[in-house]
Length: 144
Image (tube, rainbow, N blue to C red):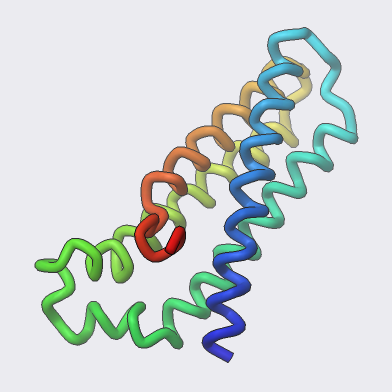
């Protein structure tokens, strides 16, 4: 089960990163060009919203069943090791914050009526979320 979740978490990460980048660009173009925010745009943003939440759920499950997740914090010494601290603390906390930012942006955009403001809420929140996620990816273990 652990190996399957690990592969799912790594594979889904590519989809999440690509979706957030594409959605951010679509929203930025929509805001700059003065397009009308349509149901299609809301559904596109919803795809990134759902993918990021599924990724968070898989990551949290993995965090608690993994031998290198939560157990690093309880075992002690994780704060002294840069890689262990990233895995045990920084990666999960920053990514939870990123998903919260994405959720706030999507929720705000749903409630707004002005198209430019809706696009702006999405590209700002998804952009901040994407930067936060990119900042805490364990690149050395992810890329090989």
